[in-house]
Amino acid sequence: MATYTTSRIITVAVLAIALGAPAQASTATTELPAPVFASEQDAAAYEQVQGLFTAAGFEAPAATIEFFDKEEGCGGARGRAWFDNTGIATIAICATHDNPEVEEAWRQRTLLHEMAHAWIDQNVSGENVEAFTELRGLETWSSRDVNWEERATEHAAEILMWGIQGGEYNVDFRIDGTSCTELAAGYELLTGLNVDCDGAAE
Image (cartoon, rainbow, N blue to C red; front, side, top):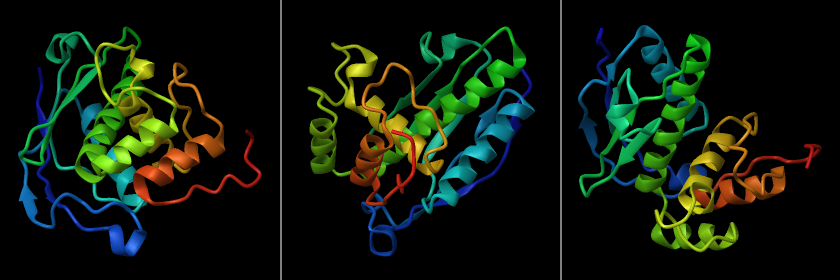
């Protein structure tokens, strides 16, 4: 497996004052290991996802990231994110498909989804997690005892993906409550920012 790397220094900044968003976890500059890519396409996906966070006015989450060419690296899933008390997430991307174009799109979407989880973990308060879970009419944030679409953390990741792309993203079909108004309410609770739904199809 070919390996492509790129160096990166992440500065975790406080956005609450400037943007009205939840405070970042730390203001310290943290040097992270370079991401490990399985292809040039993975490297391009990484740069594009970084750009989406920047364009939305956020620092990308602090994370160590590795791409794999088999789903075994993620326990059979397309992607995984792990969190601990260091404030730095560990992300693995393993989405594969027989069609290279589909695989490329899947890997980029999976990376954005897992980085959304990491951003939420590092930036959204426990109080807002509870409020978001209630807003979405769900019983649990992340319990594995319920289906994927019944976990508020998955709604949150998809809604963050929707919001940082200006509403130009189709959230996972398994999730209910996907009118612009409903998604915008969730995005505002997570980030403190609004998405304008005037004239948008409901």
